[in-house]
Amino acid sequence: MKTIQVQAPGLFTTVQDLGREGFGALGVSASGAADPISLRLGNRLVGNPENAAGLEMTLLGGAFLFPEDAVLALSGSDFGATLDQIPIKPWMSFETRPGQTLRLGPTRSGARSYLCVQGGIIVKPFLGSASTHTLSGQGGVEGRPLRKGDVLNIRDASQPYRKRTVATHILSRLSPRKILRCTPGPQSEWFPESSQHLFYSSTYRVAEESNRMGLRLEGPSIPVFSGGHMITEGVSLGAIQIPGGAPIILFVEQQTTGGYPKIANVISADLHCVGQLRPRDEIRFERVTFEVARALLREQEGLLASPELIQE
Image (cartoon, rainbow, N blue to C red; front, side, top):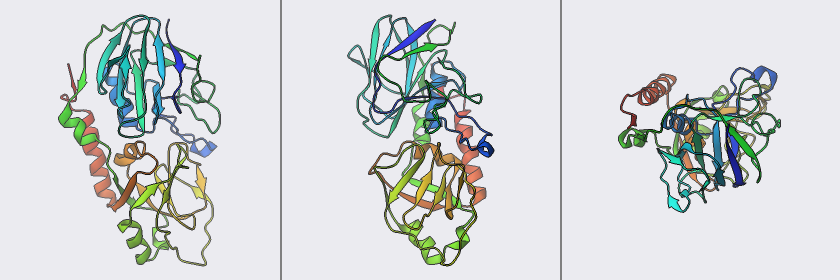
């Protein structure tokens, strides 16, 4: 069985697939890749199913030794990767010879880079998923970020190496954006029109305290109607809570219930954009209808299903 030896883990590197849906009622959020579009594309570049487990690196990449040959792809943000000091670009497949080391540095663009390897990474599944859920300490490698000295097993793959790239004209249409489109939240009517205007017209900065559980935003506080108290209820991925101040975007390891009013929800087609936001990035929100949100998701999935997407 082939392996990956972790020589340096980077800042926060975890094993992720597309998450574990359907366990919110048990208090377990889906987790999974913060930028699922990048993981899906990276897996397709190496001939894997889109849900195969890969490595998600955050802000600073690691160093990984490959004792045997392997077929790899990097997707998402550009972390300035090199293979034995030879620069490697993202969004293309490449192969390693036995004993070569892949090194990644600090991000040059967004927040996260994904390393996909042909065959996928093997870990013990938790509730049917390989994804690391750090808050509960489950999934991935002992439910934690990688450490120096970890050894990861790679599933056997018999496909020959084929150089693949992502079509530039389609990739540009899938690129992360800083204006996040939103549908009204379940408590949007709790906010007077002046509060909603302030929310949608303001620029917010991603706070340093942000993580996979949620992104805290710095900017104008959003007033809510006084005198009302809500019962704790289930919350969805991408919900934007107003806890008596600036907004918080609930993300892939979010709590599954909450008692703060939610003014809006990031649409499904823009959730991958949230995964590429760095501390101090500035963002804005744009209100769209539910019909537009569904149309944008259909358009995105159409691009991902395009026969022109992966070029050989």
